[in-house]
Image (cartoon, rainbow, N blue to C red; front, side, top):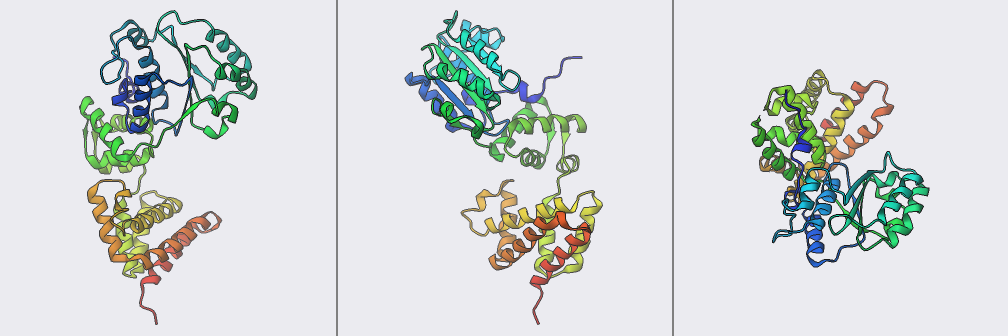
Length: 367
């Protein structure tokens, strides 16, 4: 049996052009390489799984490339590129600060820094999860970071920028990575699915994207899991069930019932949701999010903030106009209040039902 390689590794970008959803970062890095204005230290910050370490590796390989392409990418053919691709580079070092966070680890690294590179123009040190370094390790690193040899470059990566001491921050050029847009994640998932011969419904990939919350690595991990479970056929309904995601159609139907003041159908729909194994907290959180999306959809300019495809945006826009702002404000006020107080309730189901009754009552004729 062939060794299985997870999609996050198999389809890991190897060029700036193939990095997903971080154009503002890759463009800046390519310009810095082209002009030769490379800082001594980079700090890559941002959520997990958005490309920090990937960009660090691409940057390290590219600045040592002997024959960069016209568009500023590594050639992948010179001795430096080949050794990096084979994992045998003597000029690029990766350190995981989570398991090498002591002052002794840092002193050992500092000693290595002052040995000139045997191959390539630069010695590049990629330090992942740098916020895990101890205070003593940070202090041991400080002087070297401030005045390193001209051939030394440091690329620090962290998910928790606020834990980096100011003296380190001030010596780095900071790059803030953003969460990847759902549209970009779906596009990449389509590429991976097509490459692997996986059948899919676009709605299924959109659900995976939303579940990943802006992390491409998480999206690919979920994708692999579902491909194994479904035998390579990703359907919208199958993905909803496997990821325990409540179909947005329930909330559209519920909102119509509440808008009509139809208390009975609202309660019956909630029982249907409970019967599928979803809890009251999950239900209320989704309801608040749905009403928020409706409020955003009232203005065509902000309608584009709704993620999930044009057909979903149209549906939100139509329901938002049918409800109107005053009613949506009342709905959101009630739903968010009940979501906030949910944990205090003794009878959880009754608590959610009272919430729905109050929301339905808002739309009933007064008097």
